[in-house]
Amino acid sequence: MPAKDESGNLIPGSNGNYYCDANQVGGIFCPEFDIMEANTYAWHTTPHKCDAPNDKGHYYNCDKIGGCFTVAHGTISYGPGDSFQINTLKGFHVKIIYNADASYKVEMTQDSKYQSMETSYSSCSSYSDQIKGDLAAGMTLTISNWGDSYQKMAWLD
Image (cartoon, rainbow, N blue to C red; front, side, top):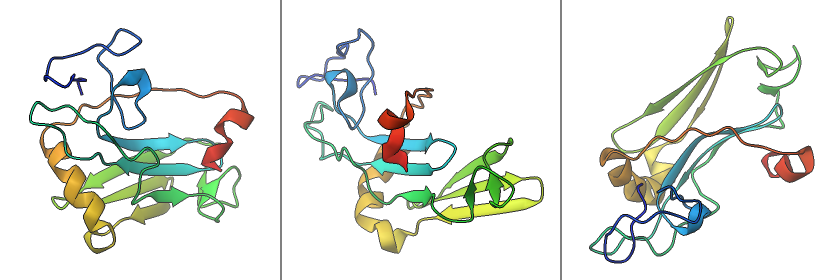
């Protein structure tokens, strides 16, 4: 971000701001790193790489699905209730650690409980090589809180 047209000019998206992401929300592509896509039952951290931009910084295509995920769901580690390592019905803390090679680690703590999800450079090298330059260049941090009915958010589960 911000979104750029093919000539490198800043361009507002369809909603009037200069937002861009890997799913072309607002009409413009750019790399994205979803730190937290979550609900009570599931947690995803998902980078989305893009094809190389033109010489003016305009992206033509990005990986909408993403890759090199860290995921917590369907295990004893994350979910609603005291039987889970991280009980999502109570407050918990999350820390994301980015390494120079663009691998990353998600750490969750709640009271004395700890849950860690980690990627490695060797397992994510094609993704890491493409997104580490975007991170180093100062990828814009945007935080949004969105959601809808369970049926529309079920992709997390």
